[in-house]
Amino acid sequence: MNPLPQFQQRSLAAALSGACIGIALTLAAAAPAPAIAQGMTMAQIASYNGPDRQQKLIEGAKKEGALMIYSSVPVDDMLVLTTAFEKKYGVKIKVWRAGSENVLQRAVTEARANRFEVDAIETNGPELEALHREKVLQEIKSPYLADLIPQAIQPHREWIGTRLNIFAYAYNTNLVKKADLPKTYYDLLDPKWKGKLGIEAEDLDWFAGVVLELGEQKGLKLFRDIVATNGISVRKGHTLLANLVASGEVPLALTVYNYKAEQLKNKGASLDWGTISPAIARPNGIAVLKRAPHPYAATLFFDFMISDAQALLLDRSYVPTSTKVDTKLNKMPIKFIDPKIILDQNDKWANLYREIITRQSSK
Image 1: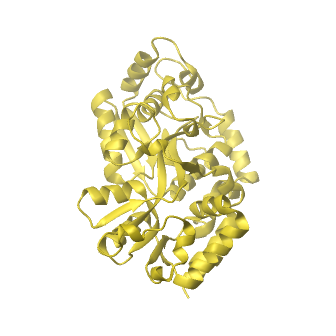
Image 2: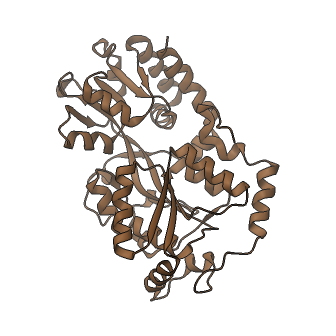
Image 3: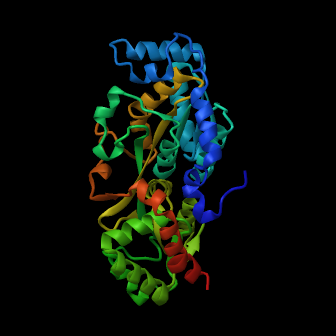
């Protein structure tokens, strides 16, 4: 399948939800459930809440012996999580890593082809919400859900937020004084920022969140004025953007993921970060497939991601969603991006982002 245009990838599931995929998913639903060690179906495993739940999951996972995950988490961070899981449970994990749009595309394409290779998916909220709409995800009734912040739990519970990607500004500490940092988005109109601003090429969800917080018409006018007055350099990739701040090529970037900025700062880079209140955040999360070939291992990994893995995520400078992990970051003033807005209004915000930010900045 050819990839969709850049600004349409987030609505991939909607694009594929015509007659062909509808027929394919109907056929998939009609197929018999895969046989598993203890004779329980995926749905039965997912909803089981007996006192021996953990024991059953561990025993079943060890018999299955394997787990397949599709993920957009950076390789070095994901390795920390999978290594800890393998060490604790003796279940070998295989990871296919790609950008969130490609993770979504592959998962939907395989469902369309009636192929069931992936057990769990760990990626961005909008892509997980798209998979929920494709009816390929399984709700897991985990006891660890009670430990999470409310925003981590979607109403349908078919994917759960494991971490928050907080959109932060990052600045080069050799080029920008802390006293000069913007306190509001209107401060970016100051001519002192001319030629110093950077942004990621596809952060239309952040853009929508900020504009709606400011008031749509006021927010759109503000960004038009910022670009006209000072310009914004557009770069592809949050890690690249953060590294450009550290190198000094981009003195102030508006949309760096906070965890990447913190990782670079901790490594000694000339970089620090902050947020303009309220911070814009996207829940990223975990989901298990209805047709997971290793259902016990998939459910066990789901539990792991919202329990043991939460402290590991914090150690990697992520913002975990568990209230059992001591961090102020998931308690700060945050505006959460609604995945439904990005899916249902993707064309609107993609066009506005392209018109106001990327197209004007390339002139």
